[in-house]
Image (cartoon, rainbow, N blue to C red; front, side):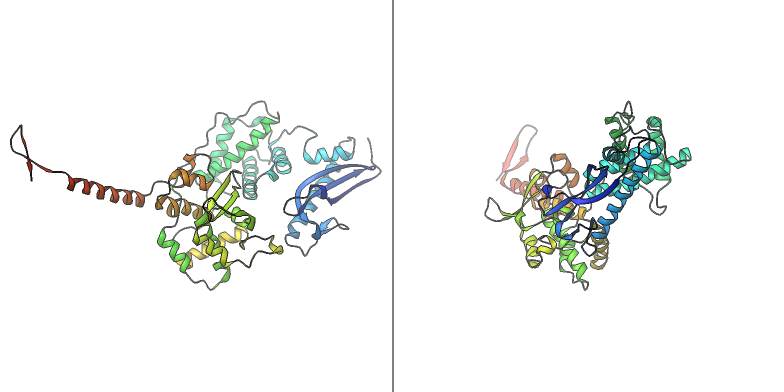
Length: 427
């Protein structure tokens, strides 16, 4: 068995890889007998908040507690990788510890191992909201394995179509929170994430075939909620005593008139407001989800909100145009806002985006193709699901049709039947 004389771990900033927003990626450095191996831990901080002597973020900096806890977790997992190699009698080098930490020194053979590999190597490539949803799916998988096999792991080779459908049937029967059972689409979301995990195992060659091939995700269609004109006006005109509610209301209304999602509003900066082809202000962004470039004309109602917070952008908030709380806080405030303003709908940023697609654009005769571009959709069918044809729109269109038909009828001569084969024109 090989033993090492020296072994150390420390965190450092890789300044040669500085990001556009001024933050610098944090790396972990493993040193064994003077030889090094570096690992990107997929986190970044501003240099002024980094304390070199401790290899941690200044505790007084915003978000420091979360990042430092993550660094502690990485450190503990690297120590565990060293311990595993030692107990297995395998060579201990900086590279072998790195590969064990990343799960790349041996094939993944179990579902728990696959979940761990995905969390260490793949999940940081996902948007925060998407990555967070894997927490519940992972817990469901662990609970399912305990329910079926009486232990929280199983061989990947046991995953077949039968087990997949068993898991699907298990989900609505045993919710993580008994007071919040899953509906069909909630079940499908977990099945979709399970499918992606198994697909990852197939791509790496850890399983010979993909058992999800005969399986079909079955989402239910549903009409997306949106605000109508009178509800938007009620929300805009309501006076909130709590300034936090007022702020969230303004950000929500801004999304209603721009179609931007939560993260796009949160990251919106002055350089994203440009002069459009018509000489007016436009928003020029890349959709966070699809990376599709989108230019949206800045409506007066949205500009008024930017003007209201014109003094907000500064170096402390990275010159963001609007003060946007954390997503979880936003959702709590929107619930209170709806109740206080007397709106009997579950408000979310999705509702704001749907409002833009329907009430603001489609109901004002903006063509579906144009709305699709404004929303950053790559397929028109996606827009059609977002903004279905509304009864109100049908009513408007048919009112116009009745007017046209009535006018056409008045212009035609009136015919009177005088005999079986003859018509008389009545003057």
